[in-house]
Amino acid sequence: MRTYRRLCVQLTQRDREKIDDLLSGGIQPTRVVLRALVLTQLHNGKTISEVAANVRLASKTVHDIGRRYQDGDLDCALYDKQRPGAAELLDRSQKQRIIAMVCSAPPGGRARWTVRLVAEEAIKRKLVPKVGRETIRVLLLHHDLKPWREKNVVRGGTE
Image (cartoon, rainbow, N blue to C red; front, top):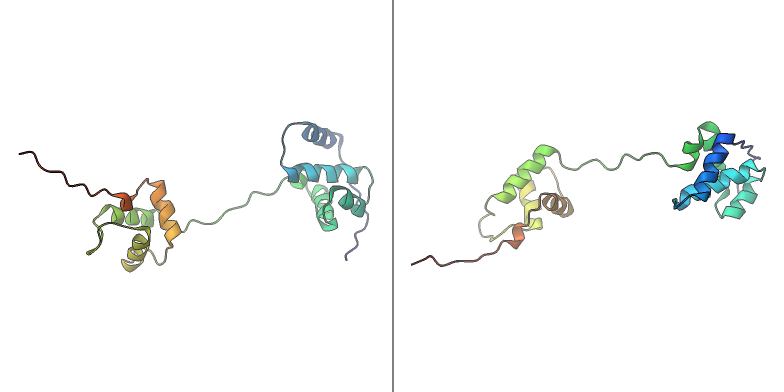
């Protein structure tokens, strides 16, 4: 088990007011409230292990919150950094080519397109190097395309 030296966190008057407003205000994410409580207790002179026991967090987490406040500012300590998210699997031209393929007639021997068939044909026609069914499903959903729901209704002509 790792032991931490006493962490001396001194909140500025402005930061204390912000934390008080945050804790007395409306609905806040639980993470933010716990981090605010950690900073308040560290400011009041409690040790890392005392604070960890009080707010039921790991000592390392309490230490990291205090260090983020010391190294940065209140927002750094309370909120997570913006995460980049996953990169898109298909670029714009690949999406357009797949949509164009779905709008054309299905391959011979098939009555209509299915998500699995679209994925297989996109790879077979070398529109994309690889693609999964879920990627195709989401792409079709965003374009409001449902080729598998095509109604095969034959209407008689007027005589």
